[in-house]
Image (tube, helix red, strand yellow):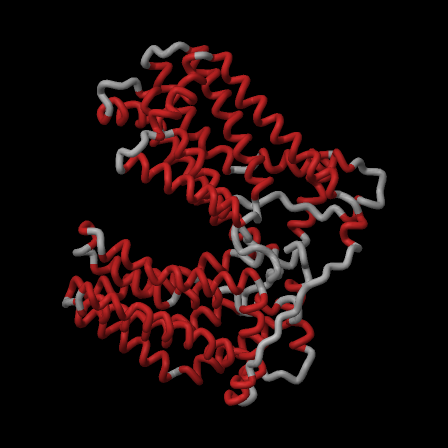
Length: 489
């Protein structure tokens, strides 16, 4: 049955209307995955010698055991955002004589085969090989690896339980920050407290049974949870949702675009994922403090240009890259009406323009760090308005993946494809390259001036560029409608 499930998943992937984009992003991510694994392997092989040099009075095994608690917390935190949970359309099987337990075991088995479970092993195994070469007991080292595998699987299945729970994410982040703070200020040594726990996996091989048993228990909890949730009636239950109303009559002053603008604003405010983009954007106003308050970055002007593009264009990037997928649930209905595509896109332009201007105004206090900070942010904001808005709208015409707005924004990869990866190159990388070239050849005034002029030129050509983008959306119209109808895409 496992082979049959795998075959059906394979066919579903290759028969999807998003095959090209899905295959493209898997190839790109595959290259990054191989690079990351090789980097981890090289780091693991050299970690023994690094630890010997940094902590000459300690055993490398004891040193690495001190930091393993942070490794676990960081991995839990990153998996929450990055690890894609195994998805399977189970409805067709619920009317067939397929055991629910078999479906649950298959889903959990697919999760165990995730590349994220290989990351720690590609670091630990080379480190263990160096330990063996340097005369460490083979049995202890090999069983230590087995114990680490048990911890990795435990983290994997814990992630399945806590995923989509924002409170757990906040809890993990708080524990990580608190632990580091206690260590950093010398209040309490978290490293020394947990070091004996993880070092015991090497010193006392029998203790490897603990992480293995823990992984088995968490697997069983996941199995029971999934098996109990697999029933057809769950899809038939109606959900009651409290409706929120608000007066947005002021949008009528925008004429025909007012109705689209009102629709966008209501969508943003009433849905979890879109509303989160607003709060995330506001929080990232403080991102510049990382670069302006750290001495190491004080002379790195290209990094400050990156901060300027990022802070003033954070909403542009996060929200704009998924246009028109935000409207995927009713996009086919909109396209069947007598709705001018040009007006639809112009409403998006107005919304993003307001966000860029608003974010720039919020970054004005950075003038405290010098006029250069204000000038860079101003030039980057103009570049975002004139160049990046048309770019992000153009790439939006390639979006074909549906987005469910009522789902949690954290760890949610719905709507993501190769387009979201590629669009970041012209939006983020190109302006930094342009700024760097003119900054190092001339000076900061010229570099800021070039970004500003490019933005003004793009803004002056807005009507022409929007006309070309409108034609592109019309050509891609039916492909997007077909893609948005695939709920499992």
